[in-house]
Length: 77
Image (cartoon, rainbow, N blue to C red; front, side, top):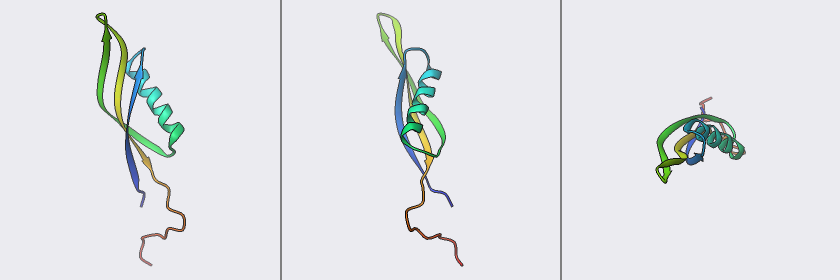
């Protein structure tokens, strides 16, 4: 049985929401391995002078935890 963990990250881009998601996932996979999915929790824009200057996303990123060293299987024998 796999055990997963969910972390929340915020990513921004001056180009688009799609770019913010792509950059955020790329950075997450640099830090953690076995990423299996992401859920976009929120989207926002930063506005200055009436123009959008940044697109931001809040993501929940899921990854599978590695078994602890020396951990035994929970399956009954």
